[in-house]
Amino acid sequence: MGRQYKMKTGQEEFFLDLLFFHVKLNCYVVIELKTTKFKPEYAGKLGFYQKAIDSELRLAAQNPTIGLLLCK
Image (cartoon, rainbow, N blue to C red; front, side, top):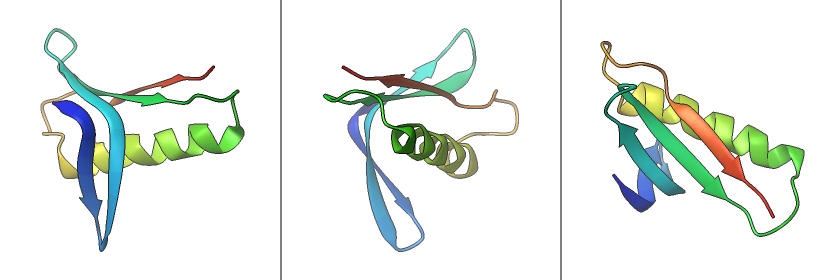
């Protein structure tokens, strides 16, 4: 779908690092890239992105969004 994918939720805009659609799994895949060590807030942000994609883009016949967080 793209890198730096722009997603608008309510009045705010967010930019996902990478967004893919996995054809065999029939779901979206959100990938967040971090250049620092893991922080708990990164997981919360990724969870927010997953729920936003599920509510904005996902169709009823598709599986829930998968999130992948890659840290240094």
